[in-house]
Length: 301
Image (cartoon, rainbow, N blue to C red; front, side, top):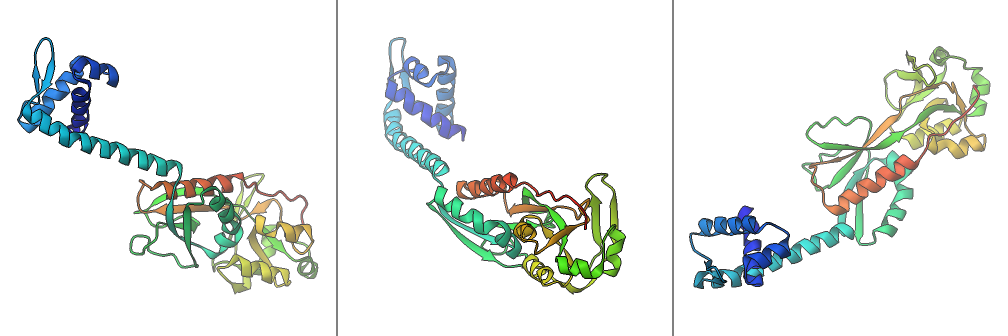
């Protein structure tokens, strides 16, 4: 890299016709420039300039080297400008693996706005619940809801999905009042996995584990919402996905002081060094998820 940098300095000295003029153009000390050219001459084993007290001239070898180096330096400059342009106007294909729930909750709204801002980018989205192998499969990034389990990947936190407990008014009327987390033990609960429910008191920070039981376990938020709307049971859902249902009294929040832990959302990539197209996509997702505020519901069912 020092040789390439010194090559650029050599071209500047040859073009300016001397060290002093080149040093002024480059904004560096004349002594530093002279030392760097001497380093270059030592590396290639040839004298490039004939130096006298009055003038500096290219040697025969220096003239030949100048003709070759000038094109290399110019090509490098153009390449740099082109890459800088790509950073300002990202272009190309982004291949992303995204969970179904994330797509329904967030991505379907975000994609249109992103493509309007970055029309030179194309998205190829693999929407499925499977956690793909980012290294083995031809994908640039993948989205994870929950803490990632791949220590060999680079994880960037996009935001969180705030959860609360919901059920239909008819179901709540049939099962009676729910005053405390322990009341959930004898009520049908629709769960995303087989484990107990962990609930956190949003006021005191107290935590409790509830051995909630139910007749449906499904790793799809859309299905759990639909079952809750049909009066099947109580379930934990992202606040955003049910805000219209709550406003229309199709679903009601319960145990408003107790919430399941928020689910973190991550973008995973294989490396920290990202092309501009992927970097702006991740930044855009982060900005949009950060701007979404959790809903607040008062009262207790």
